[in-house]
Image (tube, rainbow, N blue to C red; front, side, top):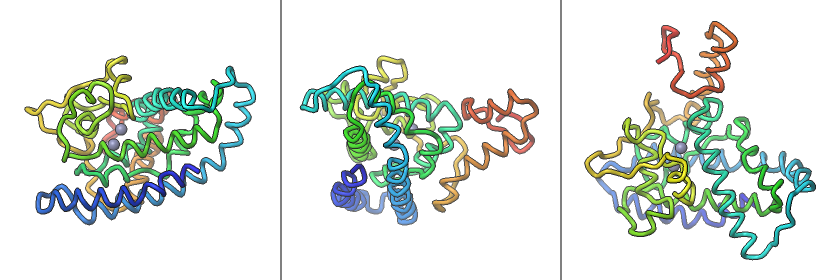
Length: 278
Ligand SMILES: [Zn+2]
Ligand SMILES: [Zn+2]
């Protein structure tokens, strides 16, 4: 079902990308190789995601048996689910930047030096290995119906497509409540003052509540990508490079504690060629 929601929206996404590529023609915001690579990663991700849901939906129904509440399936129940899922998305996304085991998947999304609507397609097939599905499990425990959870996870991702653009400036009062292109440009920037900020999915309020919000400053233009840029368009390299680096670093670590730090500590503990922390 999740796959169907995003598949149904696919023509809208493609039309928006075509419009934006035309809008930025000759400005260097788009490159064909980058966009083709993003599209390949999107297809791979959709396949992996559908398989992952098939594998874990039984677990969701098992947990759902022990739910705390019997929540209504009406508009209020769905509204509650959208807000609750977005809260857990904030937690998932923050963990994806601060725990290397999760960053190994999420880095793929951040590794483009460009930012345009097609960057939203750039996802990793390894999220199920990182354990993304664990982050929505509490929703079933609270009492949200598992198929509704699957749908709302997809809707959240679908919403986020529209925040991957440099074509839209600030959006007035919406900036106070919602994740917007301005907020998400900051999230994709590698400037020291912007890094690890604005983790929001749909609502920016979580960043404001938990102290991870920063405003886009016109005096500080965003520089897109990751600290150690990868300079590749190969979907397999973009998918696996951080996993390889992480396991190599864990193998080179000299104590059990250092090994665990490489796997589950913050990504900046990565080792350089001489085996020292970077
Ligand atoms: Zn991110
Ligand atoms: Zn993004």
